[in-house]
Image: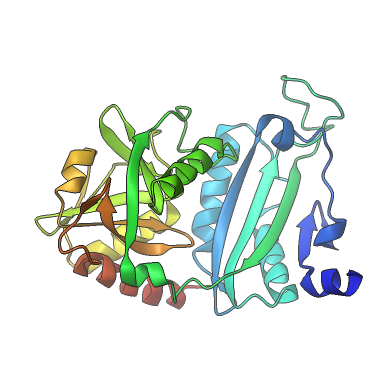
Length: 293
């Protein structure tokens, strides 16, 4: 048994130390555990290199700033930790997950602890996973619509992920792959991704605001789309408009660009991944690899 655990063990990072995952510990008083008082980022790895790390680092700094939370390391130090974990775990394709919480003050209290005496908690780990050769990119995803009942600051990438997790379970129970959330009649985003439709050849996605996460992959894909002379319109759209669209897709750090072929049981187009989504996936992978670290 011990030999099997040793073979499976990853090296993880916890507050300055690289440890076997079975030895990693965080206090039961950590505010991430007690209050979901934390933020996170996920950076994809292709060919052992990090995709759009600086974009994720900028968003992390913004999330920390919005919550008045201190970072225990600089972004340059964080890059070094990412690279070290990728190397130690021999990750060629997969992801690096990082989480920063407000720390462990020693007891439970709603009031924020003094950052001078309670340092932030920093945890990172890797996940080896195939990203480019994803069967869903060939067959497309099925999504359902659900009410968006999350808190109002969805632009902050916090670890408050219970409702998105419930949304994925609702989708699974309905025989679908994911859920698109709807607020006041308008689609906000998927449970862990940004949502798009294609109408009259135009790419339509919700404009940035506190209602959605400011996706790093979203920003890159829209930039590449415009450079490829594709028309982009950033505005809210209804679920009914989505069902009548020519095609749809989602973007995220781990899915890249993923076609959506069905919404609430209604097939889009001919029920297969559309040309815009397929082309954007190709462009995103090609262009992102050029700047990978």
